[in-house]
Image (cartoon, rainbow, N blue to C red; front, side, top):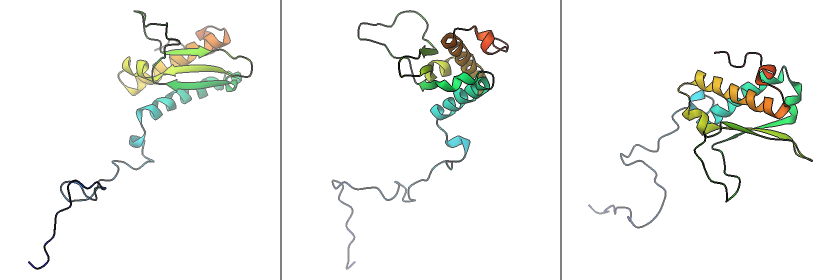
Length: 150
């Protein structure tokens, strides 16, 4: 062999051009427009949005409320500690000077308590209805007459 090929220096950093089997880098599992490509957070946010859209038909004033999805509830201050009470599934922040009212739904506690998509969608809707009712000072049955029906 007149021209020996030297192996790539193992200490030299650089991007890998191929996987370890020499076949090239893999592409995405699914194209972005397929539902499989949506993350769990995006799917959960869609469930919240669907629930809000159902309620906005009956309560147009909900357009003045922000709906937020957070992964887990936060402790408000350093002196606050977790206690033995149940982890909240949602919360509200009333409107104040210059700030809109806010309904918060916590994704992980809801996901842990449900097994499938339908069960998750039902629980998300219940949480949204309960929080909207609290923010508006109404009962959940007034906000959604089908509240509590399985």
